[in-house]
Image (tube, rainbow, N blue to C red; front, side, top):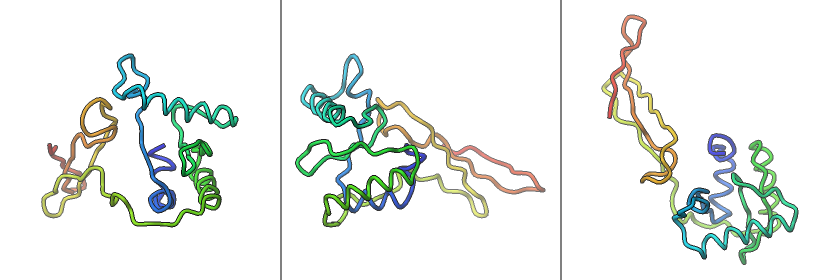
Length: 158
């Protein structure tokens, strides 16, 4: 979902200006030794059960839209950016939220290492260990590349 709808600038803007977003990691709730408490696990189960009762597409990788008082309103389709955008716009039209200032300003989740003059930087990220610091996507390495005689000479940066 991050590489699809959640990387679309239109969706990012709509979410940032009209919704209070929360990101959860399924393993935090479902592992044999979950990292969240029983109250939080019960709340996610309640949201999902309300979705089932409304015959919504409840599942593991989903965008749940809740009413202002915390009840399940919709499960947004995320197969394509256009489907996600359409469903989010419908929720905005229904609730008519007053766009406000961002609670947390958007910032890059990772910053590439500096490159020497005239070089380009290849900034690689990979799926990380969700149990460690930094979350799912974090930088693993960077490479600075200098064009030389039609070839690229790269050095690895840490």
